Amino acid sequence: MRLALAEAQAALGADDVPVGAVVVDEAGTVIGTGHNTREAHADPTGHAEVVALRSAAAARGEWRLAGCTLVVTLEPCTMCAGALVLARVDRLVFGAYDDKLGAVGSLWDVVRDRRLNHRPEVVSGVLAAESAALLDGFFAGHRSQPLSPPLSPDVR
Image (tube, rainbow, N blue to C red; front, side):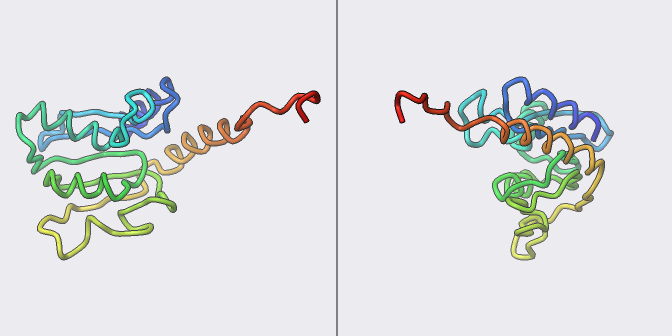
C-alpha cells in the first residue's frame, strides 16, 4: 500500500485526483503501477487501477492476471471493479472506502456478484486513514478555489 500511496502522490503533479495502484504477482514482485491520468491524458478511463492493470498485462504479455493482487488507495468504481474481475485478479486490497462511487461494498458490490465467473478476495481498509487524508487534502484545496473569477464592480 505504501507503493500505491507513492503512486497517488504522482497524480498530484498533473492536478489529478490522488489515487494510486500497484499490481503484485504471485512472488510479490510489482509488475504494474499506475495513478490517475484522466487530466494529464484527457482520458476518462485513466483511473489508477486501469493504468496499473494495463501495465501489468503488458509486463506479463497477456491480459489474464491470475495469481496477482491489485493494491489501490481508494475503493474501485464500477469500471475498475469490472476491469479487475475481467482480468482475473485473485486479490484486491484497497485503502479508503468511496461512499460516492465505490463498487466493492459502498454503493455496489461488483467483485462479489455471484452472477460473475470470477470473484477476487477483498481486503479493505489498509492504510485507509492515510489514503483518505491524501484525498481530503486534494479536494479541500480545490474547494477553496473559486469556480470563476469574481465580477468587477464595472460589470455588475
